[in-house]
Length: 308
Image (cartoon, rainbow, N blue to C red; front, side, top):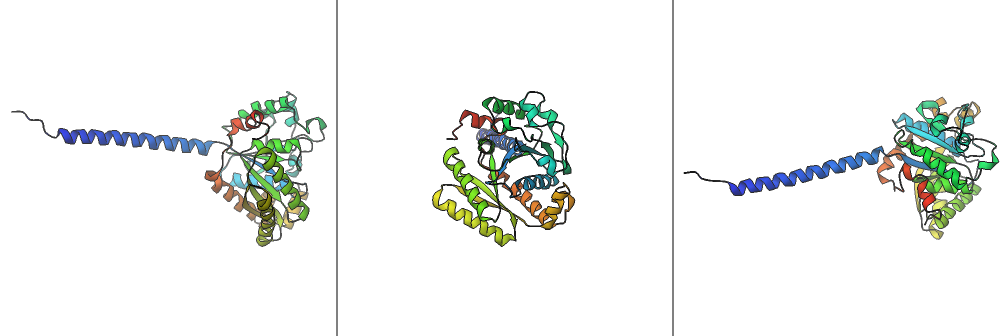
């Protein structure tokens, strides 16, 4: 006499296997999505309200510090009329973004090798017609930059100083915004004006603040407090303190020699500041408020030029 035993147990086992299979599939999907997020390029705009605060110097050194921590980094010199990153780093590019805008070269053809493994897209200098990009120029840049999506981990956009149309364009198009401010009262005032413009006209509400040329960390925090107090009273925004770079004569010496202080004086106090800043940028990856990946780097702004 044959008997059938354990049918209930078999059914329970099958249900458990099905549930486990679904959990495994969900976990695999989650891991894949997380890996895709990690692989996605981060676009960081670095801007300031005025010139003379060392913004381009911050960009070049921060890029090298990020590269030293294993990131593939590309700098875009977005000061299209008076670009100077190549001069700061002692580079001599044969071509620049003007050649891309004119249709003479592709974006890949103008990328040059910088120090410490970074890559640089140089801007032109003394070309008045590109100080304000046309809609056609923006579309061309959108198409060109699309091809770089898989090649880099981080793209740092070094905007020109001030509040020109190009500044707001490149800043709003990025995923993250770092504003560079110095302890000078005029710098604090001008950075606040830039933040106010980006918040009220372009609906940007998240900013990271980097204090450059501070006497020490306490001096930097005081600068941040002043800016945060004013912004907190009048604007609906979020300001995060990213950190500071202390005033260091080694930076001046490096600039004179057309080198980055991180490269020329790696044991200097300023170089140590950039190492700390790079770690914070990397640690903040998961906290990034995504506004569109590289494929939306420019398109996001073109589709909604008012930023609303």
